[in-house]
Image (cartoon, rainbow, N blue to C red; front, side, top):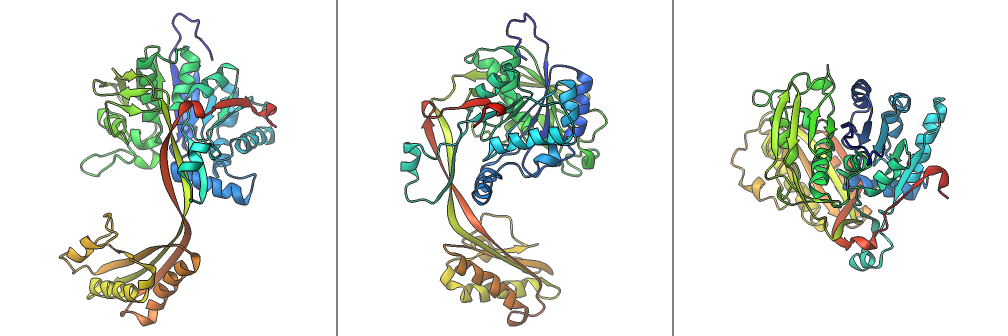
Length: 451
């Protein structure tokens, strides 16, 4: 894939097969068909790793050392692996989560089980910084589950240049999944800031899957999206100067236009003039977003600045237990009965501390842990209300009390309650800090060389 010596390297096509852990497992099929039709060079990326996803993967690996990678890996890769290997479509994904080596072994097994040629699988390592002295000092007194740095695109690029068919990553920065292949293909210097920023924003447009093709965008009557049930996932075509075109597979649902791309471009950008990534600081304030055809948008004019001196680290730590319970009330005085049930629970569970109370169907979407909005809500006339209560507890025994008390409302609470559900799960919290990049030793290796 390394075409650094080429005078005019062809565009690079990068398709997105997933935008988060739990995404649709059939999404990559039409994308791979489109990449095959477009021809070489092409890459399929899977973005399946969020902050909490990684922490949950670490917990899974605690229970089973062979686990800790994307649980849907088989379902995501099996339908497309043969076609990708046959047509030279590279695969790059952060589905390694807490166990990239384990994920790489599973990918190799999938290829063997299907009778495919043995792929060259590279593993990106070094994001786990739980043993770093600075991290340990910052997390002193916490029950640390994981500590991972957001590493950049260079190890991906190195692995692809060395001939990897598949690159398995853990906590890589999301846009690096696209920037890494771009670095390998175009041979850009690591301080070619404008080009790096352009490819980074292409990766940012891809990283959430169908969000840029109409999913999450749709509002009936205001922002209509055709055939959302069959929404196509995005494909970015990157060019040597760093600009990109965004589209989707022909015949799929959804839409790609200036509106969908603008929304996704701004998604999670706290400062459009300084989007911090491990590889570059991107500036989209002078970017142009132009519709160049049906379901085709061009992004250009992204500027880049020198990369930060530090890398973001997320330290995930145990934070007690989250207990939840729900019960429904319908008909005359439904909301009044739900409020009375909440009052009963508040009195009986006073020792747990403040309860989070929501009236689903009336008031439930605000950050209202203290209950101020609930107390001030003027309309008590709702006739179909589901009461939800929740509490953060330091120990499991206290958390289990909440479930028992909600269940007891069947006969000990207001009239007509039904449909109780309770849930109990360990609670995780995140401490974020900045670590000098020289303290993070990102690297890669082929699977057959790991020991």
